[in-house]
Image 1 (cartoon, rainbow, N blue to C red):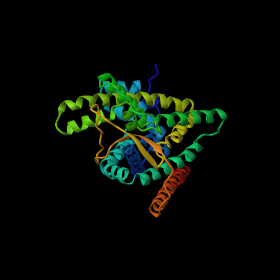
Image 2: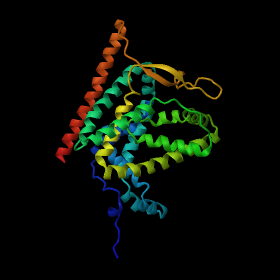
Image 3: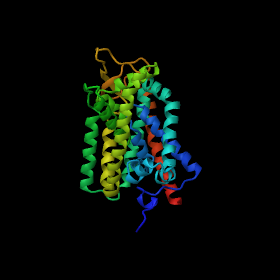
Image 4: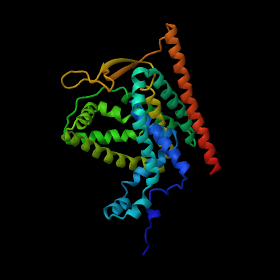
Length: 340
């Protein structure tokens, strides 16, 4: 009788890393966390840009594999640690947590007070990443270009949607959590933005504030959303992991298309035309007391005054800085791969 080993049942072998290399993974997690803080930018996009996307999908995918679940149910701690790429996941989660704790206030302040500058930098990041990531496709073909265009159109339409009114029932909260979590690992689409589209952003945010105020019952909807998030994350990772292994270039083409389409959302120059309102018709405010815009129109920059010209110049410099950062990261990553 053959005995199946831990290594044979694992989704993929774990990489052996040094402490400095894990610190690099933490830094990538910080970039992911910073992106998730900004509405309209996906942490999945940053993971894709920084070269840890496929390993992240594989690591999350392991959580839903039968051999891992069996080890969990039987409390085989040693087997769990062998199967799960826990060092990698811990480094990524640590980086995300650091970003949320240290950068959330600063990024939120920039988003409110200097949105053009912040969006310009992210626009440069994503624009350059499209070119860099496209090199991962071994050979482009007409079918891959068509898939890229389909992804771009899909993302372009999704980021332009207007929120709908939805129920607060337990099942829909689970569904909302699942859908939003899928976007966390899907480049080009923000999980927070999908919660807005599903009409649950305000509800979830209100539950968080009520819980902080001491309302224990407010934890119930948050738990339901969290359950959905875990289920959606693990389930969607199975699909993405399979696609990467069976149809790598096709999957990469689709993800590049999603990133291209998301450029509509992160175009720096915008005009607010519709704002989020609660059931009573009152405008929903963000952490800085400003109305939360749910629909914006992209406009050309104003160049009619010296002040606007200065702002445009700074925005262009930041956009170029974003492009340069990605090209530099790509060069560093290529050197590291060559030295291995």
